[in-house]
Length: 123
Image (cartoon, rainbow, N blue to C red):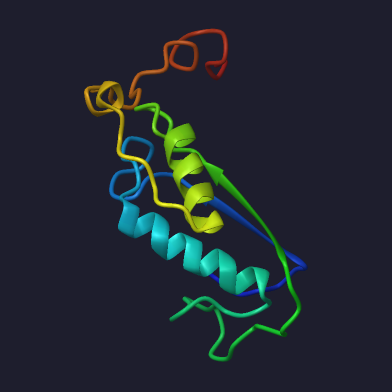
């Protein structure tokens, strides 16, 4: 992840806290994202940013921040997005609903339409 501020907006794609596409975000992780977002909205670098260059890229100009949750295999994206919104409003996050805690789906590893199917490379 690179956190240089190089436009008048910030776009963030969140794919999972621990495992890509399958893990949700802990309250601690969402709190850290909320801090980053507030910093970017204020035109500042996040705390301890991972920059491409050696110097800060902040210019003090406020930025719109767009966050997209793509940790969707276990249906956590909407829940995590709502909890991030709660944190940004100053509210406490909600506990994970029991129904979501029981979801055990894993990411797809076989794509029949691509492997020998209609999208397969032609000889």
